Image 1: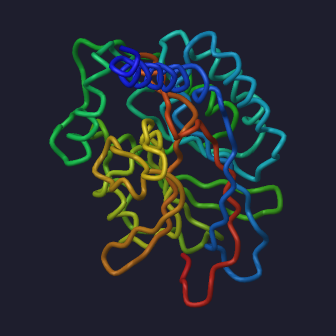
Image 2: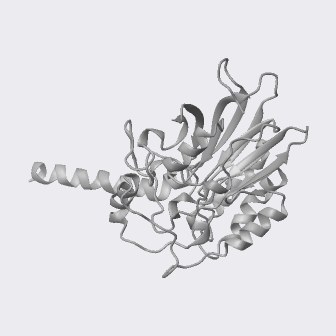
Image 3: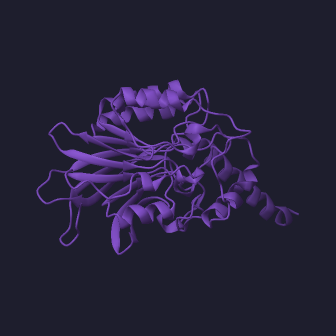
Length: 316
């Protein structure tokens, strides 16, 4: 009798432990990743960019809020926020409180779909199916306008703008660092809900700037192709949550877009039109309030240190 029931009970216990870990422990295991990217002209000092993404703030997430506040101690040259700050229409004050210390630094931002629209409850079992369909381009998802909760994204925009952060929804911008280094920025609204308008920003990097960056929330291939073909040296994105549910020693199962799973998070390369760009995808530090789980994919922010490019690698 013991042998008959021992294995099923053991499997059940392991499964329960994994669920408990994925819902209660790993989502709170915030970490900072450090990445070096060789994209600067020879002789330029290193530039430190802190990328935060996919905060998905829900009222009462105090540990996340304090961790984000603590990142100001890194004293980055530039903060880039790649969207999906909200997962609660009431979460704007807590997002601004969490990011307040970081807003003393130069910054830029784009929005994601969850900044515009609140999440809806869905059967968690549909998570992998829907994300897999999106990865293979089967969703055809468009900008939702009915039967959704609209988030007060304008309040976020106004606060970011008041702090001097550069909004990049289908537009270009510039900012100067304290020592006069000029950074040109090109950003798109969220491709996941088809708000991107690349024609509005086409034309490539600003040759007068010391560095040009491309910024977008969701790393769909059509966007990455356009940025790379236009010779942007570095593209920053979020959205994927690093896969959110990963298999140890294997990796992510889905990306929630048409990007391949090998590039679901971290630094990689993207080639289009005979040109090559670096791509950094943040795994983000939150999740949809109705699927608040992570497994083998801890929540994160990234400190990217940009250094002199390698010989033979052009930078615009």
